[in-house]
Length: 253
Image 1 (cartoon, rainbow, N blue to C red):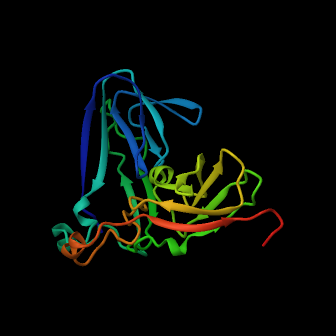
Image 2 (image 1 turned 90 degrees about the vertical axis):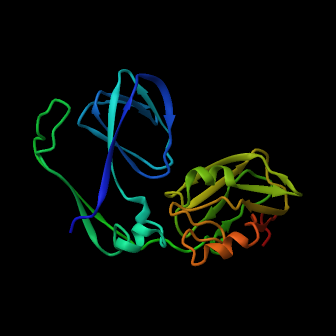
Image 3 (image 1 turned 180 degrees about the vertical axis):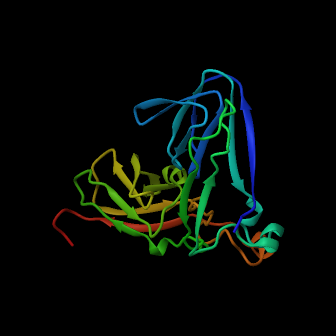
């Protein structure tokens, strides 16, 4: 079965190094010209007719030594959200439980007008759509002991948006933010906070702002897919989530 999609190409002038960070996995391809990429201490040149898979929420440095043309193929975004006309007419582009194969024919030409050496196939397996609002009640906190700088770890049932995890979650004590270092682990299913100073025994709050969301756009108390947009628009503004936790002296329960 063929699925409707659309393609676009864009020209870029030569430019110095800049940072790219995307919220979805992204296949970057230069059909004309070359790109210089750098990530995690490694660098390489992306020549024409070659592609690089840019991981979601992982910053990468890109330089354009000479003018380039980039190309991408995307599904109609109007088919993603329920209630939008393309979605009502054709449904979602991908169905849960099905497998799909991306096929690039060897007749596809490179920047020099030559066909590919062979066709390319990549099979994708589709899971169910994530349509539930985020529920802080489902998060699990692993709390440290007082007197040390062991991290506080918050585990989520499914991945969240890494960029928002880094700026929309924090620890407060007595109404003030606790300074520390944040990182994510386990494919964005864990948020880890290491304080700058040793923990003191007492009560704390984990604060999650209402802008926090998962890759599907679901937020705390508000799913991306809603049945009645008017009732949501007239409702109260979303509020941050406060999750209290206690840091105890080492050796106490």
